[in-house]
Image (cartoon, one colour):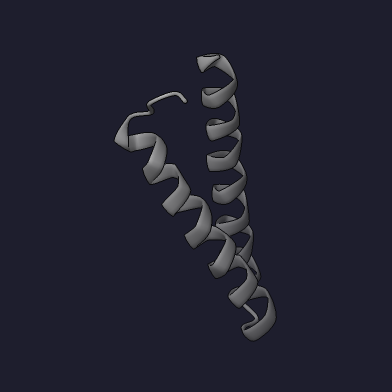
Amino acid sequence: MADYPALWYALWVVISICGVSTWYLKNFTKRVELTKLSAYTGVIAMTTMLFWTLIDF
């Protein structure tokens, strides 16, 4: 099992917060631009984590 730095685990926190906030904003508010920002931030964080994980092997 690979040991990852703390920033890698912090990405999990960012991804989960973005996921929950995107869901909440989409279903309970009409703030479309904030919903898009939250979704794009989550996608960027997940893509970063994916490449970081694949490059480590």
